[in-house]
Image (tube, rainbow, N blue to C red):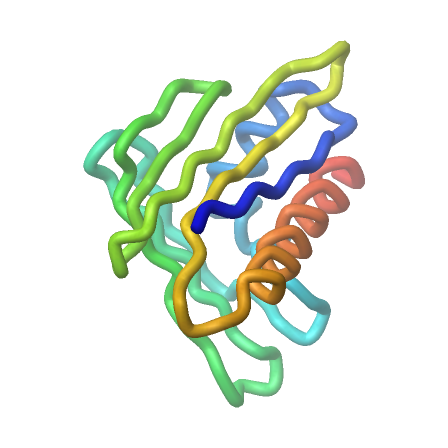
Length: 135
């Protein structure tokens, strides 16, 4: 099942792209709630390159590596990658009158309810929007 999330960020495409792709920015927004954080991120942004972001509860009780391999990268337009479990993710970036619309479509996994997955991914995207607009 494919799930779509969206947000429009009040920032130009260059700033949005940098905040989305540079590890020094990723660590500041890549978590769904305030009791989680992203202590490290690595990003080799090219087809065949890898992405890895460590996501952990701040109290240290749980954490995981969010990893993927890039399938397609079109500068300031599109990023697609395959997660470690084979699921696909595609994110499109569209410039609209000085703002940037981000649309991500991901294949849901089978262990958690789809609504919970959508809520989590949307929360991370909302966190990205907040971080990017504040910076």
